[in-house]
Image (cartoon, rainbow, N blue to C red; front, top):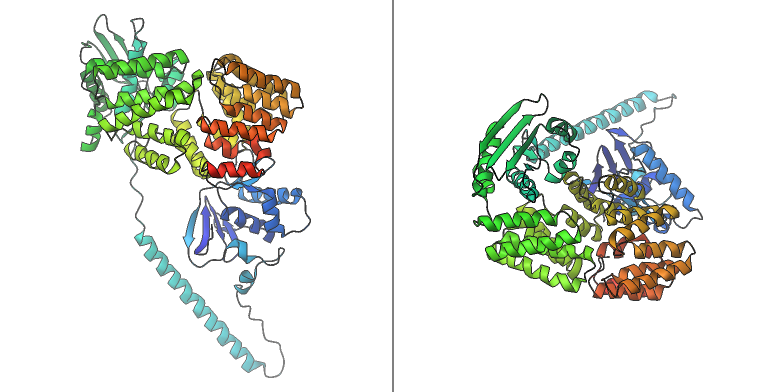
Amino acid sequence: MTPGNCSAFLFDDVRVEPGTFQAFKAGTAIQLEPKALRLLLFLIENRGRLIEKEEILDAIWNGANVTENALTREIGKLRKILGDDPKAPKYIQTVHTRGYRFIAELAEANGAGTPASAVVEDMEAPPESFRAAQPVVVEPPLAFEGTTAKRTHSYRLITIITIVIGLVTIGGLVLWKKRAATIPPPPPSLAANAVAVLPFKTSVAGEEYLGFEIADALVTRLGNSTKVSVSPITAALHYGQRSQDPRTIGSLMKVDYVLYGEIDRTRQHLSISLIRVRDGVALLAESYDEKFDDIFRLEDSLCAKVLNSLLVTLDHEETQGLQRRYTENQQAYETFLKAHFFMNKLTPADNDKSIDYFQHAIALDPKYAMAYAGLSDSYMRLVRSGRAPADYVPKSRAAVMKALELDETVAYAHSMLGRIAFLYDWDFPRAEREYARARELNPNLVHAWYGSYLLTMNRVAEAEAEQQKFEAFLPFATGSGLSQHFYLTGQYDRVVDLMNRKLEASPNFAPSHEWLGLAYEQQRRGPQAIEEFQKAIALSNGVEGLGSLGHVYAISGKKDEAQKILQKIDELGKRLYLSPYQKAVVYAGLGQNDQALSELEKAYNQRSLSPASLRFDPRLNGLRSEPRFRDFTRRVGLPS
């Protein structure tokens, strides 16, 4: 970035001016030494990019014989003055053993400016452009003969300078007012009613899906209103498992209202309640006989009752969204609900059930676009079952293309197509277009997948913001794109904190144990890393964690154990698909770079190589200086 037209960089309450070589926090000038301010400007110029320590030392110290400790001290000074916590950085992120990355969201003020890379000639003094910009100092005249005329001349000069300063100030105020008048005011904020919908209880064995999915459908429908803020069903499910009363659950979830109910299909009976959390007052409490032969009418009726109880009215567009259906076939819709229910249980056996149910829903309604999109998603989840991408990606692609052929406005389908373009085609422009279209149709979709794309593009701050949005929306989802983001950007303490919280809720989810182990490894906590990898292997029957265990053995000097892991990968690979990436990281740990690069190429050819991992996985750092590695990343189209 070359800020030639930027007079100031703005982030939070900080303003940094390249042209005047000054910085301000909350309107007060920051007392920064020239070298520290030069370093801050250099980080800002290269924002979002990992800057290696050697590059920073060359740029700031200009070849002087200093150690990395000098850089560490200057970073420490910046963090202290800016109020940045190294354990939870907002501005300067440390990438362990490698360098630093400026991650704050920036705004720029336009005007004449000077690139920070060009302004400093003397490393210990302000740049020439700064010295030339200093105000003229009028020294008092000396007391000797003829001082009266000279004093009069000095007074005139002071008067002229004062007038000029006043005119400049007035002109600046006029210009500021004109600019302010052209900036549109922020949209008025709408007071949203925060609602949690708990899974409806069911009395018939085997129909748990119905209570869960009706609640989920209500979340989706109510979410079409800008006047209602609805928590995702997974969050409600997490709290609901505590067997606490709805009002207590509402307090824990920090919502205003809780909606819950019970379905008894054998007696054709339904009860529904909506309570206000702060005082327990029931805004809606009805119990009545309800035929379940029209599930659409049932959902419409429930939505209308809730919105009426909250005194919420919908505009025309919101009403259309509330009434949107992707099929009119009752049986197909209920089959879709079953498929969605089993897909979200995340076990291989349940995912197989979801595929069967999606296919059945499509058989009942061949024009059911949403069912095709769901089928595409279920196929992609076969990655956790030891299936080769060649087995499921073509099926997933065919399903999502059919969904879009039937209905181009299905956001879910665009997000799936974006995921395929990103992970398997490495067609990054196509991925960007599909994610953008999905977000246009439904802003609540694809935050995690889009975050991975942004990270690969080295748009690190944007990527973390997307992952944080997804984490806030689904805080109790077992998988976590945010933990992967933290790991790949060197924030290992945050990985440990997040994964321990996830494992407390879902202790048997193998990928969480592997990500925790990876963070432990980078923290040089080898025994704990090995323990977590072994748990991941046991819980996944070897699909997760083998390569990671082999890598930590290799870097710990246990080369025989690492070689045994390579043999296990080969043996297991006769029954299940394991990505060559697992062998690549073991070879990288052993320092056998040629073998590691060969396995990376195999993983890419088999479409089981993550672009973000190739770019940022610290276990590959020993390969990055290899000409063959650089040539490989260029050939596969990894952004520079």
